[in-house]
Amino acid sequence: NTTLDVTWAIDWLRKSAAVVAEHRMALIELDRAIGDGDHGENLDRGFSAILEKLDAEAPATPGTAFKLAAMTLMSKVGGAAGPLYGTAYLRAATAVGDAVELDAATLVAALTAARDGVVARGKAEAGEKTMIDAWTPAVDAATAAADSGAAPAEVLAAAATAAEVGAVATEPLIARKGRASYLGERAIGHRDPGAESSALILRAAAQAAGV
Ligand code: ADP
Ligand code: MG
Ligand code: MG
Image 1 (cartoon, rainbow, N blue to C red):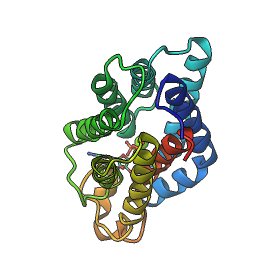
Image 2: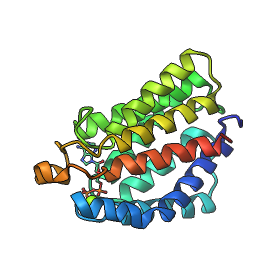
Image 3: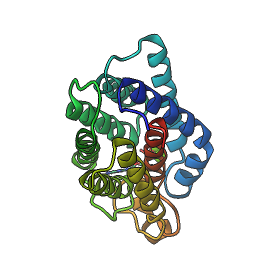
Image 4: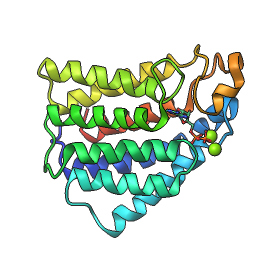
């Protein structure tokens, strides 16, 4: 149960890079089924570049770590996911400002801002088989946990679990946004790759916090 300071933020990014590398092929396979098969490769490239930047110069606050992630993902990832994840991290950076440590309320504000950024950028609503279907349940669960007095690490654990459930719940959906929307009913039965990667990244955040 760690405090959510810059050490946590850096560890989150490092653990995200590790889990994206580990699930690279699985994410490629998901995207092959309903997209163009590049999601795992795109994200792995982006998070590898984040590791290089972290090695070159360690950020001083969670906000600067999120900003580093945003800039790198926007410039390296491409496709739909690059600008969407980039916007998520950029909005999170703005939400936390120059806080040295995130309390539960600031964490919820950051997660909410990240989700709202993805919505503003991609215009997807809940149930359209996108990463929003992981992010929105995560934000709702995080909000509920914080409201009931949970510590920041537990708020992250609640968010990660809800994102995982949300990612699985994309399987029966028809896609309304992104490449998968071209498939119509043929997308049914396949998990959305962006929802899956979002769940992996949110689980990495909880693990970095020691839960
Ligand atoms: P591309 O489809 O351009 O190859 P990626 O494969 O990297 O991009 O990412 C695909 C993922 O992006 C999808 O699985 C979905 O979760 C997400 N996505 C696509 N379009 C949108 C959108 N408009 N809003 C939210 N998420 C989206
Ligand atoms: Mg793709
Ligand atoms: Mg692509």
